[in-house]
Length: 369
Length: 249
Image (tube, rainbow over all chains, first blue to last red; front, side, top):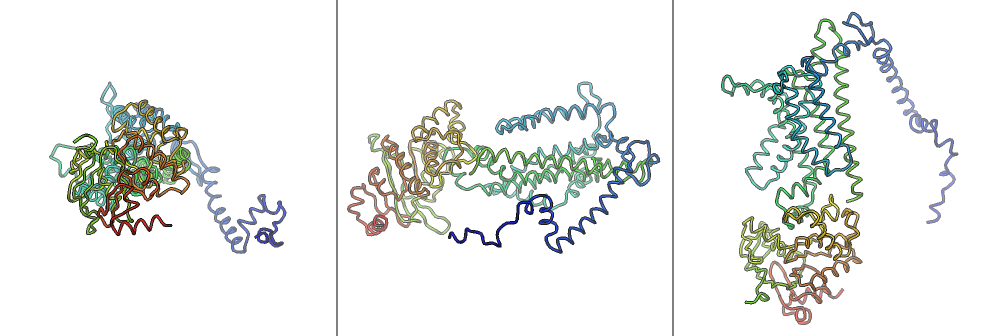
């Protein structure tokens, strides 16, 4: 045994300076063999031919202010477009004078969400539930108006990032509880409940969201009595929420299946009812296991909101496209779409980071199972 | 009949099938208040299934089970009532890993009995003292040894102030050096007069604690006798064979 521990001469490591430091790192990771070297050089060349022109276009030759495309320097990005139309990217066609209401509503939300970032999970859940109950009515009154002397704003005029956040927010907050109920229903011992849940999940997952939205917008009015209309946005919200909840149900079911039978039995033996068992014992463990899957669904949902364009609602992406059709800015697609993409990325990235943070907090709570 | 002889658990001709498999074949068993019944038998003999029937974790297809006067007849109210009277300890502990020890203990008193949190916590701490691990109250189950986890599980069941305690092979998943600490708690509980039904292979425990030994094989109760008789003079050949297998190694 002692023989094996002592390094043979060939295993003796080279001096420290040749093992660590940037040069050694380069040699080890980028140039260790001839094909590594070749790959490194090819990649460097690709980066050079793509990033350098992009940098020149986006930064060096960019125009930051101006009133139309004619003010923009050729060969450079025209960020003036974003600047001039920023309000529309954010709010769509929401009237200028009323935009403070949207800002106020989001400010209230941000303030109310601060406790969710404090690392005390129990209170956090109670607070989140309370928030889900009181915030939507407040936000609705501010957004739509019509009460307390607020001027009514039709949902058709809602747009831009604001609309994206409304749809995604409603979708996220309804799809999780609905998804949980569907997942529980799918595992229920009651045949009717189970059948209904399975059919719903499989049908909704089996069709594209575009179809659901299209049906909600074109087909649904055909079945309603004449004169009765349901708000277009409301139909989109219902469609997106149901769609997302079907996916969420399967994510949650994955978590439920990972909980050992003994947990159910211990809860039942203590006399907990079915809902107490689920709420206090099973779901807290199951949901914790599938946080990455839940957030994955949220992120997918957030980006899917851009599909509402096909029923004539202008979310951030729809607005970005609409703006490029303005003759004053004709042909400035790249700037507009890049800005929209950046907007989506900021929110999706934030969700992803938040989920990692929550996982870390929960993992710190108990070192091992 | 006096309260002493009046059985608290009555099983009459209980039959259970898992699909085609006939697990329990006509079980007749009475347990008196304060009686300690130890059930043993080879694996697959139906002993776990039997005690799981007593608190309705398993249903049965024929016969009758009455616990403290409440029939287990498929009525959910009866089931809930029985489960309030009966505590259970499992082989795999089945503590709730996302809750601390204290939270594990106060969960059922708070949500099933609607006990105020402070009262539930006081009760929980008393019981943790009794199983000799009050200092672990704020740890998570995953941070405890197997023996400690099983003692927490016993305390958790006792938190509901049950009249009957069921033990389903409580020491089988433990490392050998931890078996004693769990058995000691069980012996103490027995001395306090708890009605206990225990499935175990710990024959030393059975000999010193049991009032009645039950030997099961192939879904039937083969022999039922006080330990003095059961260990020294078993009547059935199957019991003799089983005892020789587990006692001589």
